[in-house]
Length: 273
Ligand code: AMP
Ligand code: MN
Ligand code: MN
Ligand code: MN
Image (cartoon, rainbow, N blue to C red; front, side, top):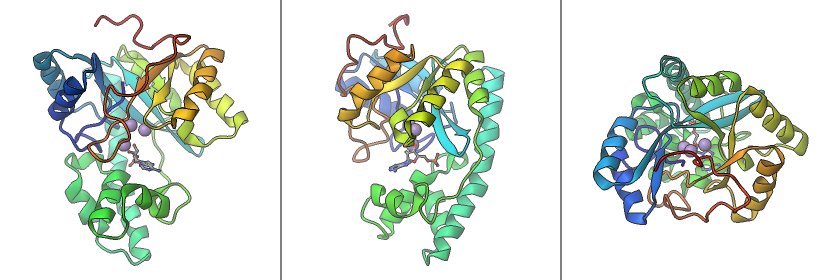
């Protein structure tokens, strides 16, 4: 229930992603590109052809205080006006942000990264840090994507630039207005202390959030039990998703992570196959 394509920062086209998921034996797959629903129509068509269940989705970038959160919307309607307009507004800021990232890298003596990242982004509106990371690997500046984030691009590192994304309230509202279910993506990634973490979960719930990811390629397996407990304690449905970005870049292929524990209610509980 969480995968990317070349419409954002994935390496496979929507069709290639669906074909891969069909090969791994997944019953169903969601496409959840960052801040765009551009790939959903193509993925839908490929899913029909291969017979795999398809869930149209999106992963919305959110600013919650100083923390960037990701909210996945599942079963969204890509023609709903408020989410279409909202995502468009978020994407507009990405170009200027990328110029600031490139300027920060230039200051460190690493030139030409805007052009390098831009060339790697298939959807030019969706230029993001992953494209910079891939360029830095290709240019021989770092040995792998993880090193690019650890050394330059992650929060607190010298080429990190802060950016204002959607509010949590707007992101949840757009998803609900499009008939979708709001899911807090990879809650373990935000490195919040327990008090802030509880506040995040409470805010999400109060605004209409319905589920959190428990089993995700962005959590270490030893974290699953922790988020399982928090899902149960806070009355959230649970989701499971690879957060797949492409061959060689993600720990798990779609459909290959462990099942959710039987005590959890899956977010897909009422969905027709
Ligand atoms: P952006 O929306 O441009 O800030 O890019 C966010 C994307 O960068 C995430 O969806 C991941 O694909 C990737 N990313 C963020 N942090 C890391 C990290 N520490 N290691 C590897 N990839 C990361
Ligand atoms: Mn990504
Ligand atoms: Mn994410
Ligand atoms: Mn993701």
